[in-house]
Length: 469
Image (cartoon, rainbow, N blue to C red; front, side, top):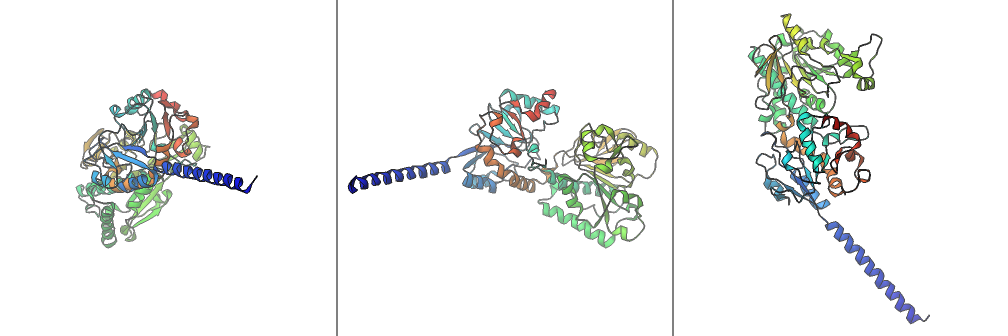
């Protein structure tokens, strides 16, 4: 082969390689420019719901870094105004039909769903909640996909996307407000009387400053003698409990173990300059029914019928109880109507003034939580002797705080933290091919575990919900 022919062939190969590299480069650019669309539905379940799953700052990053275009329905109550989203390149329009994936916070009305779409929100169906079964049925009829934030968890079962901390923050602020109002009505001057409802503060920082002023008053003047020792009981140790403790810890406090509660004395000056915090875990709440049994946490989870509540022995020592535990009907109750009635029938001084039931399971772990409340009317008094409840904080009985949507009272902080937790998962959800079978669905394990419906069918982990339909 002559040198000239070799040169021609090498030149052709070079040109071919260059065209190949140009083609690859062009395809890569085309891939980088590929756009994905997601929608964000407005929240309209209540007038208080100003939260949003993704804040403007994170929408901007999703658009610029991941090629995800975001369309939001307009909302007059969303904590981040529409203009802030327009400023970062999002669209504001009523119609989300062009978005194959739609995010929301709370439950979605039946009329909103469209065939074959993917919806990501707190569906509240995993306990077979009766009120949401028609919604689930409609999604099944339309062959929708459903991903529930509540079930997004790591390998150890720890939730990754949640508002629990914010429920605890707002719940404790409201509990302190309720305690202040109750004590003032009883004619007891107290350091909590100037604390407001959580939703009345513009920011969480402002609320914290208000609690800190109560702290300074306690340090300076002490607590009223009739209240000491002033004990706050907190049940649970998860995100909700930690949020509640975050507020409580702003007060001058001393944390003690549950068993130490029985030896507290209230006469010393030292005890008037702080409150006591007691955190109750499962081993404090229940005991084995069998005289020879011993408490084992996993055994309690697996066989709760083998255990009974022992929490009543702690109740007489509490001024306020903040309930943060997960509960369903398999587990013993903490505070029963029977117990409260017997306690009031004895006509002895009953120290418990307020129950901040952040968990808010109706007639659940706190049986006297007989209905949920709203932020502007958050409490009622349960009179166990007459078996009736009265709105407000006045009257005989125990004040019950039962706001079922506490994070909406601090919507900006709640939305920011939630959005930061959700953002890493959005590209994976937006770009996955949902048309394949569930086994082939290329989602991270933490997200795939949260897929309740796929093509309108309950996925294996959620077949049990069929019994509630």
